[in-house]
Image 1 (tube, rainbow, N blue to C red):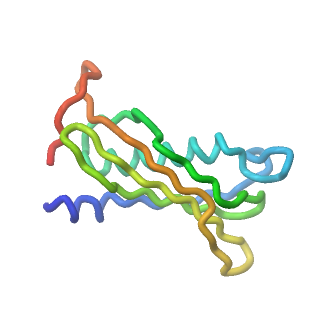
Image 2: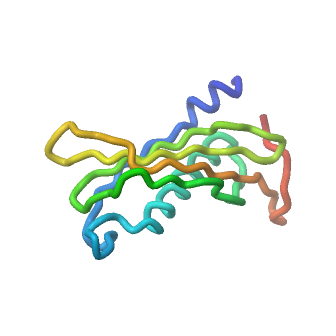
Length: 128
């Protein structure tokens, strides 16, 4: 399988409902909660691509473009954007989707870097 095919097959999409227990006093999703969800989707994407033990080593940049209100759905989409010897980058986007209309817009975008590790938690080459 080519790298391009592996990237396509590992692209990950996850839907969540934004409930009040995940929002702040502005009734919008906590930024930290959004980052946790993004890291989870990025981890799943990296693992699906590599089928190896992966750990997050950095979140390079996270841009919060729109607040995410309670009572909406969010879709998180993770996609591998760069592959190195033992590391890879995953881009994650969060889209807001209103429950009772077709309105949808991007709210957050970020990049995460992962490293493949062995049983002793030492970096190893990706199996590509």
